Structure formats: C-alpha cells, structure tokens
Length: 496
Ligand code: GLN
Image 1 (cartoon, rainbow, N blue to C red):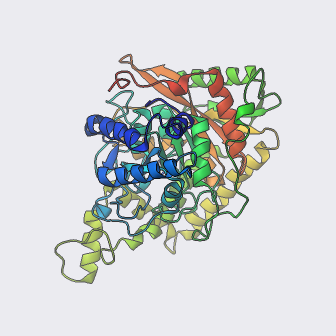
Image 2 (tube, rainbow, N blue to C red; image 1 turned 90 degrees about the vertical axis):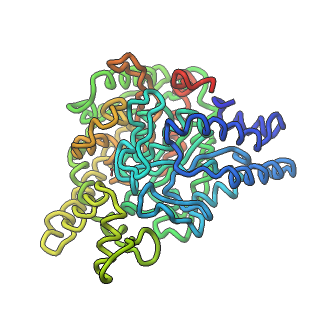
Image 3 (cartoon, helix red, strand yellow; image 1 turned 180 degrees about the vertical axis):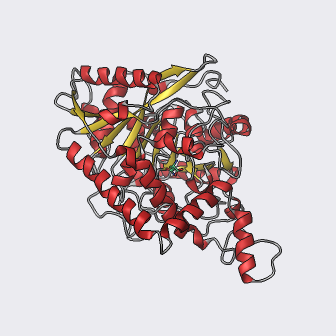
C-alpha cells in the first residue's frame, strides 16, 4: 500500500478495500516508527488528522468523493493551517497557532484530503539542506548520514520514506526540485502565479511558489489539479481557466509517444560544476528520451552564471522586508526581558532568528540601503530581465529544456554548513527558473553510488514554458512508463 500511486489509493478507497481512517492509521504508525530518527515532521496531531479521515470516509460513503478524498498528505510547515502550529521551522514562530488556512490548505481540505502533519524545513525556507531548521536536520532516507536537500527537506524525506502519500513544498530558488533530486521523487515548481501564495509564509515574494512533491508525474498532476487556481487574495495569482493536468497522460504510451518533441540542452548546464557521475545519469536519461521520439537541440542560456549572484541580492532584499513583521509585538517570539521598545524589538529578533536568516536580513538591508540601491538591487533587477530573456530565446528553438536538477547527489550532513557559498551553489540549475517565473520539475533518473557503496538518487530537471505544466507532466510521465526509478524505495524502509 505504501508504494501505491495516488490513483491506486483513490481506487482502493472508492471500492472500500480500505477506509481513509485505516490508510491514515497505517501512515501514522509508520511515522511513529520512523519519524523519531528521520525528523521529517515537526508537528503531528493524530486527533486532528483522524477527524479529517473520518470526514473523508463519510464523504466517500455519501458518493461525493473527489480523486484525493481520504488521501493522507504531508504539508510543509510554511503553510498556515487553522488550529495547527505553524512554525516555518523558526524559533520565532515556535508557538504560533495559525488562525486561518492558507489557500493551498483550504484547497486540500475542500478536496477531502487528510492533513498528516507539518513537515520540517530550513528556517523560513532559507537553505538547501534543511540544516538551518530550528528543529534540527532531516535524514535523507537513502543514507541517514546525508541531507535530504532543502528547503523542503521534511516533505522530501516524508515522500521518499513513504511517510505520506504525497506532500507539498515551496520553491523560491530550488526548494522543491533540489530535494526531489536528492531524495529520488517527482517534484514540480509551477509557473509563478499559478498557485496562490495566500497564507504561505513569505520569504521572497516575487520568487516563492508552492508545488507538489510526490512519487510520480501522474501523482503531481493530481496534486496540481487541487493546488492551482485563481485566488483574489494573492495579487500575483493569475486569472486563467482551470486546467486538468492529467489530460494527455494516457496518450503517453506505445512507440515514440514524444515524437516531434524538441528538447533543449543548455550547454551551460553541462559545464564546470557538474559532478561527472550525475552527468552520466542525465545523459542516459536523455538517450531514453530520444528512444521515446524526442529530438535534441543544443541551446544556450548565456546569463545562467549570473543567476546565483542576482538571486542573493534580490531574495535577501525581499526577505529583509518580509521578515520585518516579526517584531515581537503582534505575534511570534518576544524576549522575556528588555529595557524599552527598541530593546524589545532587538532582543526578540536576536533570539528568534537563526544565523542564516540573520545573514539574509543583513544582506537584504544593505542592498536596499539608500547608497547601494542602484548599484545592487536595481542592477540585479536588470540582470534578472536578461536571464528571463535567455529563456524566451531558448524556447524559440525547443519545447522543453532538460538538464540536472542539482550539481551532485546528496551530500553529508555538516559538509557545507561552514561555507554558505558552497551551499548556495546547490541551486546552480534551479534559480534562473524562479527568476524567470517559469515552471520546472525534477524526476528520478537513476542513481550514483557513494564512497560507502550506498545508492543515491539523481533527478533530471525538465523546464517548461509559462503555464506549460501539462506538457511537462506528460513528458515526465512518458519516461516513467518506460523506467522504474520513481518506484524504487530506500533499502531497509520497505517493510516497516
Ligand atoms: N537554497 C535557496 C535559498 O537558500 C532556495 C531556497 C528555496 O527555494 N526556498 O535561498
């Protein structure tokens, strides 16, 4: 059961082979056994979860169930969920109980899905290894000595260790795709504006986007059907007709289902910085795509090397503004002792935020200061436009772009914590996609072997044009019809 697809689970629920309560209990039991070591969830509330499962069973009995009714989903702890502790893995929000639901949460509620719990993450989604979390790191289920990636590391480990049927994540610079690559599952960052950010705790608002993290492209399509849609409470939510992202999946069979598809390979993605074993896995996956009928075109994204420096001006700038709301007055951590108002602000923030968050606030405040605004912030905005323009040119020659999602397989815990720049380089292939507002996904494409002989997953990134998620999901699904990487599970976790 734990390896079933969302569609299979839906069928089992509909035919009453299993009830939502039974399914939910099975996951809760697995979580009770594995979460103490993996640390994927920061908040579990069995009563609340089982009440939702009971409601789902009633809905199934009444014949009003949808495709995700009764299915247990893990929610990244960046989404406000009414009555649930919502921490963003920060001491600042350690005891914050959300008074309302994020759009994403209410969409899952309306679909009748079951909230299994809130997952661990890098503090305020700043990081690539989940090690900046106030609640401690998360183990990569493929090798407990390694990180799951970040910032959606808890959701990633939960999907990989089958501690949920699927999960949500957010991706500001790579936080869905990089952990999907490091933990071996399918993760999709939608086009900016497709999924409402209402109630999703803000990091860098012009980049943040929520998306599905699941075993397969088909599962992601079902999740996106629930998550996407216009919401007037988010001013950047895009008003467009609702799509069915599963349409077209069934046509991805037979010989050469991708005949005529043009795949662009950016030469900059296969240059310095890419681990040789990862490169081999990606090349093999591309060869498989040729067999499926696709055509390969070499393309160039000449400004890709500027995406990390640009991001580390813009994202901290936006973060410094977004995080100014945590002042100890309205909600969040407040220092126990202080002399006056200013001292209260300073002590509350000094105590409430971790080191990486402080680093970002300092950088952001600096680049936005009167004397440096033009030199850094404005300049970065101009280069952001050039980076986006690179993709516009590229998509004249191809339908999707492919390459690695991360430069290497999962690295050891502690390996990059003392070198922020090494950590920032994890997003070499993902950040430009956020800067351009494009959709990107990572699908399992094979494994490398660690020096200790452990199999470590590698993800293939698929980048699409604006609002081309349905095509990307088809492209992912076609590959998953002829490969079984996405069904593999970490050794030792199958029969727990
Ligand atoms: N690793 C990047 C950062 O630390 C991206 C994080 C994210 O996508 N939330 O900012």
